Length: 232
Image (cartoon, rainbow, N blue to C red; front, side):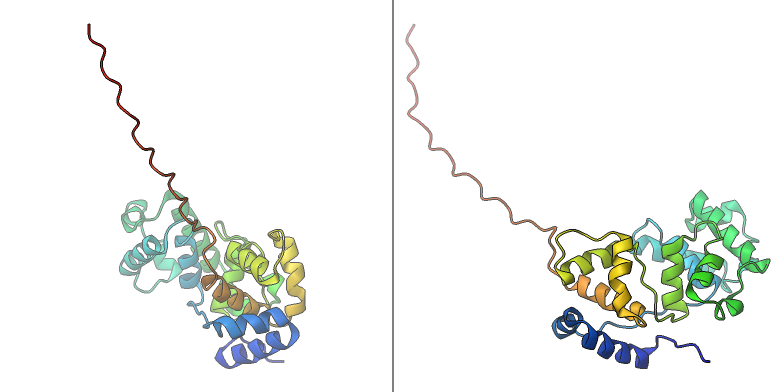
């Protein structure tokens, strides 16, 4: 049986399904429209992008990535492993990200991470394969599978943006933790990845609650009558 991929045509099908089964999603789609499909390259290229993007700004991550592409135009893991510490530092990688990149590249070269075999695995088994590499946690693996392999039914419960969006959309009194978000998302099967895309899209169009109206300044006190200096 062919594996279902979350492509442009299936994204439209998924949106119709989500709107039909969940009135809150129907309202969100009416308010903000459909989300765009996100895609990243498969393999070492896509996962290395995720590692570089950890705990840095989008601008900084892009700058580092462009320098890495200049150093390794093929982005082949074997060629990445040929770069010295000095060369990787010049690109902008921290010591931790150098270790993570080498761990990932080594796992791919040695066959512990096999991207062809990955497509035959179910989601949990695919996540387990990816997270054996240092620096690849569950969230990174889930995001990679969604955007690089088009997995249609993944809900990254650890994503703060999804948690905030779900709380607002569902009008929850408390922000749900990862476990509760995944439980809420059960009703969105088999299109949880599409639901995540819609929640991110909705989050970007939400009011910025972090912005606070400036408090009005108290009226300036009128200067009182000046006391006359005592004569000595």
